[in-house]
Length: 381
Image 1: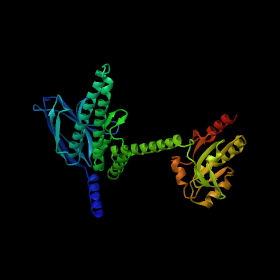
Image 2 (image 1 turned 90 degrees about the vertical axis):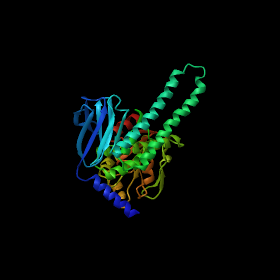
Image 3 (image 1 turned 120 degrees about the vertical axis):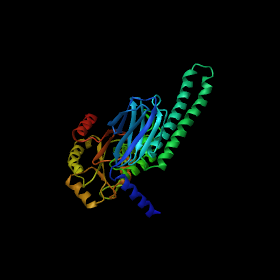
Image 4 (image 1 turned 120 degrees about the horizontal axis):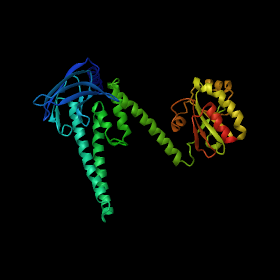
């Protein structure tokens, strides 16, 4: 089974990355004789005008193009009248509909991706229509005597529609992680602030799968980068939640210092503390160290402490750096990367620090050089 899977993936990649081949988009729109129809390729932040033709006396049209992998296109009559297509190489897609109600009244055959998009659009349109009807009930009856008793019923119907469509789209993406139609599905929105799919794991699965097959596709790259950003934001939210729900405002760290004695971050409550993550083998960290040493000497008599967490796994290099950079403050590390501390504090770069007040609240983030000196000066003036 594993060999068969790899064989299919190789074939898939070969087709995805192969030579460009011709496709055709043809169709007929009733009532559109003499009107212009446009065929545009969709880019990340714009559209690439591909072609335009006038519908003949029977409302027929035809476009030709080339692509080496599935791509999104708009078949457009006007700014507000268009349909989205997902066209693969060598496909011969046929569109039939009406000119007047093009967006709501068309059918597509001969293009698997485009047929999927049409189904997704139809289901989404149905869900939004049902939701809009419930919203109208809210507005139309808000002054009725029985309004309050009806709200629960309407809320239940509203939430049921949202949940059902969200579940359908989520299941679709999970079952089709290698399909570019999943990109389209993942970006469906109820409004500007609410995506239909709110499951980060589903998004991660699709982004990873698609990026492995279409690493040069603009939409896939955008999805992959957006997913990375969402993951970072989610990790940040988790950190914030930990800080709010813990007995104190920051997770504790207990790690051995250079002499093997365990040192606790929480033991420093009552002092202002710079929690600083670094590495003896990181050039940027080593540049910052002498500045930290100077600031420590300047402010420690006022109740300032530095708790440095090393992410090293080389004890000799760590000890040498402490000595060479004249670090007399608290320095800890398990010489295994101090993974738990790094994870708890969502460390994405080095060096990185948090400034904590006497109660353990974070009052500064990644303060460096003059900014750190100015902050400490204001605190201890």
